[in-house]
Length: 485
Image (tube, rainbow, N blue to C red; front, side):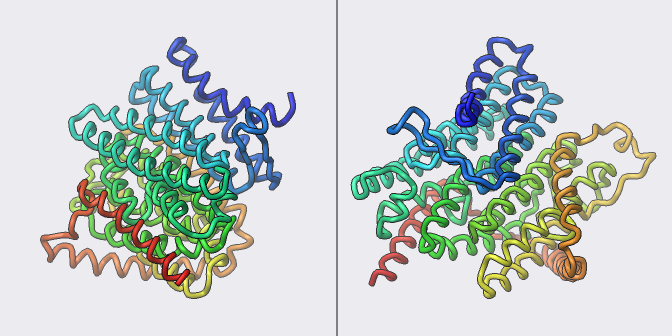
C-alpha cells in the first residue's frame, strides 16, 4: 500500500474498530490500544519529518486532507489522551458502549484535525459533539443529563450558524476550502464560521458552556473534553490564522480576553474541577495567540490538563475551602505538582518551552501580558498544590490506586523538558521569580477569600451562553466594519 492509502486507512480504522468493539467485546481493549497507538505514531511521525502531506479522499471532488506538523501536535495528543483515558476507564468498568464511543471520538477528532474544507469539518465536529454528549451521560445523574443536553443544544446551535457561514462562503468563493474563506474580504461568512469554531474551542464568551460541563462530567470524560475535544475547534482557527494574518489580528483581543476571564474565575472558584475547567478556557485563549506556537501550547496543555482531571476520582473532596486541610497521597500530589507547574509554564517542564515559544511569536506588548498571566497561573495552581502530604501510616496512603493514566501523560511533560534543558538557560531564575510572585498573590487572595462571603457572578446559565454568542458575533462584525471604514 502507498503511504497515502495507509494514512486514509488509519483515518477509517477507528470507526470499524468501534463497530467490532460492540460485536466482539473481548477484542475491545486490543482495538482501543491499537488505534490509540497508531494515532500517536502518525502524529509523532508528522512532527519528526516536518513535512506536509496533502491528500484527497474519494477523488478530485472528495474530501481534501492535510497532515502537517501543526496537525501532528493535535493528532499525537489525541492518541496519548485517549490511551490514558482507556487506562483509567478500565478501573471504572466501562462496557462495550463506552469503548465504542471512545473509538468514534478518536476517529472523528483525527478527521477534524486533517480536513481542510468547511463541510467535512462540520460533519466531523458534529460527530465529535454527539459522541461527547453520549459520554457525558455516563455520569448517570439528573445533573449530568441536563449538562449533556445543554452541551448538545449550544453545540448544535453554533454549528448551524457555522453552516450558514460555510454556505455564504461557497456562494461568494465557489469553494468550501479553508483557503477560499481566508481569501474572501472579511464579512458575514467569516464571522459566522468563527462564532462556531470559537464555541467548539471553548474561547471567551463562546466558551461559557465549558466550565460547568467539564466540571460535572465524569473524570475520564472531563479529561477528553479539556484535553482534545476543544482542539477540534482550535486547530481550524489556527489554520485560518496561518492563511490570513488579518484573521489572527481579529482573534487576538478575543484570545487575550479569554485568557484574562478564565484566569480571574479560576482564582475565585471554590470547586477544584471548576478551577481546572476555567483554566482550560484561559489556556485555549493562549493557544490562539500565535499559530507558530499554538500546536505545542495545545499539546502541553492537553497532556497536563487531562492528567489532572484523571486524578479527580482520588481527591478527598472537590472543595478548595478545605483543600489545605486534606492530606493527599505522595503519587497523587506529585502528579498534581508536575501538571500544575507545566501549565503555569515553569522550567524545566514542556509547558515552559511552550510558553517561551509563544512569547517569541507575539509582539513585545503581548509578551508583557503573558508574564502577568503566568503569575496568575502560578497563583491558580498553588491552590491545587497546597494540600499537605499524607503520612506513610495514613490508611489513605496505603489503599489508594496509582494514577497510571495520569502518569502516562506526565512523562512527555517531564521528558520534553529534560530534552530542552540546554535551552532553558535563564529559565530557572525566571521560573523562581514567577513562583515567588505567584505564591505571594495566592496568599493575598486566600486572605481575601476568607473575608468575602460572595463570589463572582455566575456566567454559565443558558441565557448567558446564548447572549455570549451574540456579543462575540456582533463584536466581530463591528471590528470588521471599523477596519473597512
